[in-house]
Each structure stands twice: as structure tokens, then as C-alpha cells.
Image (tube, rainbow, N blue to C red; front, side, top):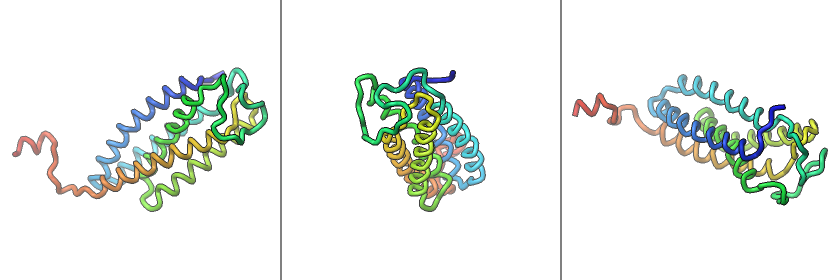
Length: 185
């Protein structure tokens, strides 16, 4: 059975966020030069990889039931802490889980990107938690996950929107600091 405990998922999410930073730098480079087609190609691959990683992180069953939430139930009490759960690590992982998507969609959607991204993240989070509830695979279906996923996606969408707008506002005619232009000076 493929299952990763929360600290391992948090490590994967941290690595994914680091990779996303490099991806955002590449997307900003393309945006500043008006290379929208290249952006879309990179985003198509990156979003597909993110979705595959998301499925691996959240869908496999856990070897043991979550002690804080009875099997087959949905926890409607936000931020329920239990002595057997490291809620801080879990919340940090959930905040970072949708951050790459929020950053990427800011470069894909120009109009209302923050609103559309937030609504998409909310919808995907609800689907994940509902799937975990219906599969009865020892995973906890929890309102805290929906809240933290959505807040993480919203924060990343805001940051991504600002970065994308800044990159698109740059003009290709501006001086570049590439090695070729430094030698010309």
C-alpha cells in the first residue's frame, strides 16, 4: 500500500515548493518577454505533475485509522487537535499543498485569477475530503484541511498574481543583465 505519513508529505511539499520557485522564475522570464505560448506549454506539464503529486499525497489509504476522527465521519470542528496528531505539521503541509497551483494559475489566467484559483482550490479540497470520506480508507475527512488548503491556494494566488503582473509589465526593450549585454557596455 502506498502511504506517506504527514511529516514525509510535508517534506515532499517543501521540495515541491522549492521546485515551484524555480518554475515561477521561468514563468516570469517568459512573461516579461511576451512568450505566452512557452508559458502555456510549461504550465501544462507543471500542472499535470502537480496533480499527480496531489493524488499520491492525499488519496492512498492510511495503514491505521486517524485516532481523532471516527471512521466514516466528517470532522466539522475546525482545527481539532488531538494528542496523536501533529496538527502544526499537518496544517503547514495543507497550506503548502495548493500553493504551487495558486502560483501557476496566476500566470495562466489573467482575468480574475485570484478568485478563480481560490474557488478551484476550494472545490478540489471539498472533492478530496469527500473522496476520503467515501473510500473509508483510514484517512480523516476534515474541515480543517479544506480551510487550510483554500487559504494556502489564496495566498499563493495573490503572490502569483502580483508576480505575473509585475513580469508582464516589464518591457523587452529594457536593458538586460545577460552576459552578452554586459560585454557590450
